[in-house]
Figure: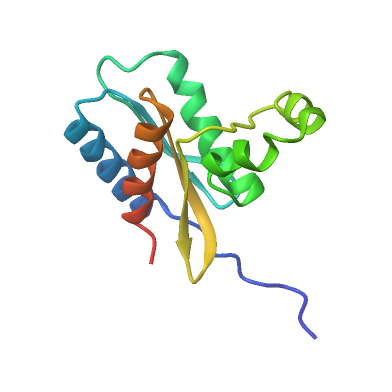
Length: 140
């Protein structure tokens, strides 16, 4: 009987591909953003702060990517899910590193989350669009 299982995770080469795609998407939108790419455990693999990106966006991008791997959901799905639950809405936002607005997208292989891309510096929708473009670079 075996109790071990192999966990798929994003590697450095995949993270660099995600980073490049996200930066290209930001360029197409004329935005300067921060892009963070994490592995399946939410640990940082690659990061870029584009010229002119806000410094506050450094941590926000990393936290968006972390949120995706910690909870298994794109960050944009959080607010609609908790908007009508005042106690949950006001309590959960106090959880360290939890981001409940757009900009975090999963990187998937075989239907499993193997990493994530977090983006900050534009609007929630723009960040989400850039993160999705980045995640597509390494997703199957």
